[in-house]
Image 1: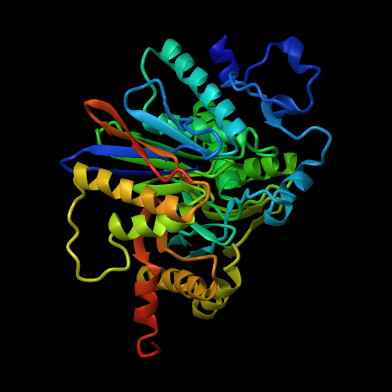
Image 2: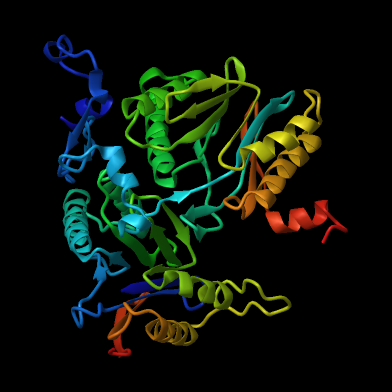
Amino acid sequence: EMLSAQGFGGPGKMKEYHYAGAVENRFSPYAFNGGTDTTVIGCSGFHGDCLTLTKIIDARLKMYKHSNNKTMTSGAIAAMLSTILYSRRFFPYYVYNIIGGLDEEGKGAVYSFDPVGSYQRDTYKAGGSASAMLQPLLDNQIGFKNMEGVQHLPLTQEKAVQLVKDVFISAAERDVYTGDALRVCVITKDGINEQTIPLRKD
Amino acid sequence: MALVEVSGLKPFSETSGQIFGTRQTHLVDRTNHYSFGSSVREFAVPVGEEPSGFLTSCNKEGGVNIEMNHGTTTLAFKFRHGVIVAVDSRASAGRYLASNDVNKVIEINPYLLGTMSGSAADCQYWERLLAKECRLYRLRNNHRISVAAASKLLCNMMLGYKGMGLSVGSMICGWDKEGPGLYYVDENGNRLSGRMFSTGCGNSYAYGVVDSGYREDMTVEEAYELGRRGIAHATHRDAYSGGVVNMYHMKEDGWIKVCKEDVSELIHRYREGMF
């Protein structure tokens, strides 16, 4: 299983979020819409812990909404997830999380976590079984790292979606656990747009 | 009532029996995720197993792949014009580089800074908790907490979990009524006040550079350069440190962020002709 997320500001003002289904359970969604229309959370790792964790996050989001009369912002969800994960510091949830959403200014925000709750905000991040293969590709294409004398063109929505599809197709070629299908969630100020793309089925 | 709980006040009948106070911790096998704001801290532990042993068995050889973010060089030193704090920005999970631009300095308030080295999650959690306690102190007592007291709070938090496998190497720096303050606190409960500290796996390299260039009467620019060099050379030689140098200067009227410079560019400047 793997997932990646990239966020960027600029005229597109959008964020993308993608995941792939597991080999064993043909199509099982790992991207979880946090009950808000500006945030998506993706979990990879031990599926049992992913399910429990998303159940807990869902309940906490609803509690927040009922007691504070507003939906949680992406940054607040990230801080909350950090404390939820840390409460299991000595018996961790074996889950690698990535949160993607829009911040209060409407710009793309990506937050990546380790299993015990340390987190930070990034522009792009790959997580899951093929993350070590794909993070360098994202570093090069989105962060323009390790290239000299190139123009830093801001990423458009079409280019970003295409890049993510390419990234997952590459992952499916070289990682045994990645494949079957890809679900892309594009988050803009107009809402969340989901599309499903098939990948190698072997 | 919510306000009574948050402010930590207890009715008289409860206080008489309590020696440990509100910072009592429970170890349970399933945490209650819905009791936020409570003063009792709950952590889940594996049933029937010793907590620190359980996590160390969760490594590659054991078939599990839980790796936490680690590895750092941080340094801080006092001089005539305040305290300089410089940190690198690399987070490694095992041999994989999780991130090259982590912020390892937590800005507790305009007069207090905390650095993080060791396990990223431990440092982030406990120093964020320390920031909350410092804020509560300010609200309850109407004056800012001293650096000595803040570092002691963190030290006691560490002692509460001594032996359970936490990994925190932190320096609390600030300016209070006694002047500039610098304390080193670690997961064993060590709390030392001093003029210069460096923590993390790259600390020996940083000590070498700063020890040889340190003078108490340095100018501010010389001090900045010394901090930069300390981190840059340490990141060059230590595999688990790198990224950028984040530098802060703690002055009498608060801290300022001095710079954020990429280490590879600094090394090229310092060792011109070597490459």
